Length: 312
Image (cartoon, rainbow, N blue to C red):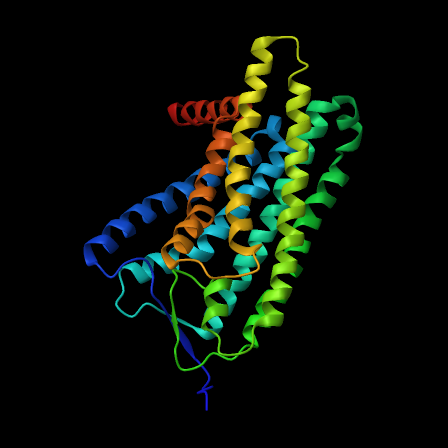
């Protein structure tokens, strides 16, 4: 008979059993996490404080920055704690909560990236239509729809996985409660669960990626029509950077979840997961805002005002 004793906690294997390697990884991920939080807080603060940045594009960026703070905080603090802890455990309920927020925030990021790509498409390819279309009401509807749809997207995978049986073996070969290792760990029949999660992932990731990709391709085609070589180079540089980050995020997520099987080498699984849980939240502030001329000018004005106030 299979032992179906209820599992009250899981043990996260993490990256390596070597103490020196764990200290190195702890230091690296801690620095990345601090830079990610600081970069996104700077974006939120500057967009909020500077009136010239109260346009839909920057408001979408503010939403993305807030999401990235929540997204990386769902994974990284527990990972850091496990790197310096001998126990390396997470309760069953804590694991399900982490899984829910991971799916919910990941799906919301997909929706926001697609909406942001559409916003840039309208602004560059049809600027006259953009002024009349991207009103405060329309921006608010797109933003709220992205968050609400993300909330509901997270329910189904978490509900189905939480109802599976997990036998006495409770070692998760990962650094957080991700879908593939949990499905592999379960002693229940996971055929239906895998099929539902595969279809949901396919619908969310592929549809958002295609919408984003089509928007950027149309943007690039529009840029090629700009008569000025310097204008083409400047606009194309920004869009290509955005497209690079979007491609890294979507390709890694699609590779992980839109597959008929979950059998990947554990180290490859962890390496790919680091890209979209740790690296992408750090790249987004750099690519989307800190390289943006309007944002840098606004940041300079705020710093100048700060120095003037404290000089009086």
